[in-house]
Image (tube, rainbow, N blue to C red):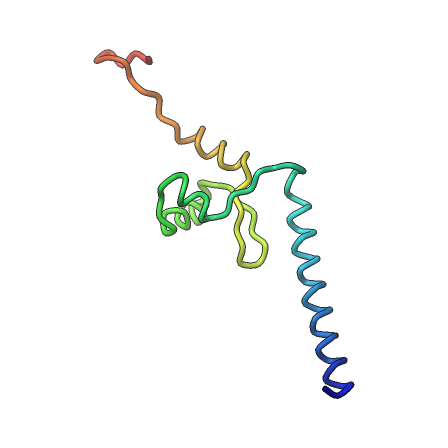
Length: 99
């Protein structure tokens, strides 16, 4: 490898590392220390919804998320808010009394 090739490769790696560092800084700015983040595959697996449904919820603003580049995360507080907004209480009897 010639010195010019090595220098170019090194400069490209440095640029990529700087972009990664900027992405990490973006996430740090919005995520509280110790906050549990789920990605789309976690939501799909635990809530048993399709990726299309999850994308629709995001597009409609129904569920909060953090996006850095192409990666999307769902913080615990956003998931809990979503569940509390759309939680339906069970009805106990014909008169509609709660259990």
